[in-house]
Image (cartoon, rainbow, N blue to C red):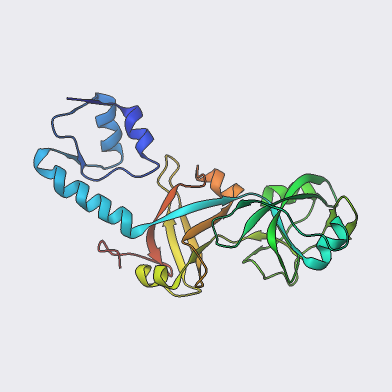
Length: 261
């Protein structure tokens, strides 16, 4: 017989607590029992255990999406790579990212805005057609710019700043955005979740500061791997880190039924 404490239950918040919570022959401390009741989680006994665990694991498998928290970073065009690092320079991969073919590069640059600067900002590869800088709202205050919330690639009517590299500088006239939260999906993922490219999901975090992300845009492509991308400000607000999971609780502005559709 094990003793189930409040601390143990709190550690389970990241992955979710089944409801009803099966205890079998184990014992709950008074604080643990209050913890479950405060969250309207039913305390299940022996005859509920198999059914509860099976239902919970099935729900986790069907409705959960992994998290990728994204810090500030830059995507460079090949032209701008050469200005910042020298003629015929190629980015040096140091780590693969969650999406196939994407990588974090060794190279870093400094961002310079009207009110401040941020050094050592990572470049992500491979090169793109247009240079794009993705920062958080907090970063914008530090730099003295106020970029809009946009999906990647939508850089018209956005502010610019100065990029400083070891071989040169670039005064961008546009290209700085705050990335709108989104989910990458393969066509098979999209079929599983019954969504299409451009749909909006409602995703709920499962930690102690549980929140619901509204209108998380679905982006579907054959090369994509299932992943929820959120910036550092939003991730910190929800207590999220890369590798956590969010639960799909709705789509296109409507909450799902109890059957998940």
